[in-house]
Structure formats: C-alpha cells, structure tokens
Length: 231
Image 1: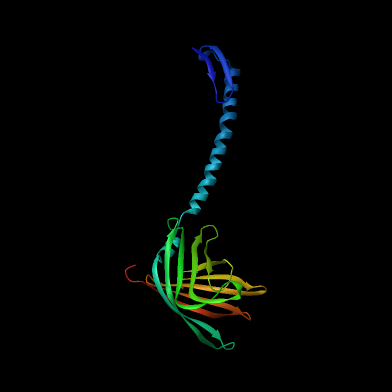
Image 2: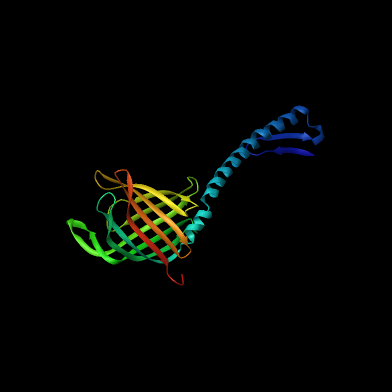
C-alpha cells in the first residue's frame, strides 16, 4: 500500500490505494514532472564538468615542459657582447661570464632561472648615479598549451625598468626556440629583439640575442652554457 510519494523539491503527491490502481493521467503526469526536475540539473552538471575538464587538461605539463625540465640545475656560461662598427662589421665589446640556476615551479609547469654575472658591471641607481655590482636577472620560462608557444618573462638590475615578455616557437630540425619581442627602454626608443634558444645536448645549450636595425637583425649577445658537473 503506497500512502504518499514525495519527490525532489517541494512537489508532493498523495494517493491512497495500491500502486496498480494509479490512474493513467497520474502516471503520465508523474513521468513529465520527473523529466522536468532531473533533466535540467543533469545538463547543468554535465556542462560544468566538461568546462572544468578542459581547463585541467590544458593545465597539465606536456612534452615541451619536459624539454625545459631537462635544463633544471646549475650552469656556467661564457659569451660575448658585440658592437657593430658598420653595417657588415662587428667587434667584441665585452666578455660575458657567470652562472645560472634553474628550478622547477608548479610540478614542472614553469621554470625559474636566476642569472648572475661573474664580473662586475655599471648599474644605474637613484639620483642619476651609477654603482659597480654584479648583473642579476630572473627569467620565468614555460609553454602555453593553448597558444602552443613557449613564453619567457624577464627582469634584470642593469638596463630597463620593463618586465619583458617574449613568445616563441620551436623548430625540431634546428632544435631551437625563436622568440620575438619589442622593448622600449627609453621613451620613443623601441627595439625589436630576437632571442634564439638552441639545444645542443643534455649538458650544453646556447643563447643568441639579436637587435633589429634598418630591417636586419644583428647579433648583440652570444652565450654558451655548460652544466655544472654532478648536477
């Protein structure tokens, strides 16, 4: 004997008698009410789960994050800074030496590299003064799964007050990432920068910085990195 049927929400039906005695109109109405209550809730749950699933999927580190992860550890670097005498001739203006330590962040989704020069350089400080000190830079590296591009943000203590941002693409043939950006370190003085990140082997890689002048990119800095033994 069923004395009442209570449904989700505030809908309550009372019917006295055996279940086999339900009139046809009651059975039809019961089916419609159940459909109206359950279907919208099910559809909403499915939509939310799908959206959240996409966000989680595209947040996971992939093969390109693993490629950056192979560079975690301590490195030394040697390189050169170039001055261009004319449109076809360059000379070494400064030797570059220092160290780099790269650490993973967010389980290998991003990487933070801290760079320090071995030799002291002139650094701008307040009141128009210069002071001698070690050059320091912090670089955040990652790969955007949605844009399918490598990304770098960069700050330093020597030239510029801008938080620089670069995006780049990887070429598997040359095993290099080419980043392009534009800097404005002084009002109205804009420079197009090209940064090439070249993978050699697990213990060596190379950076090249180019500045665009008169429609051509000319090399400005070249740095060779070697992994510290035991890392």
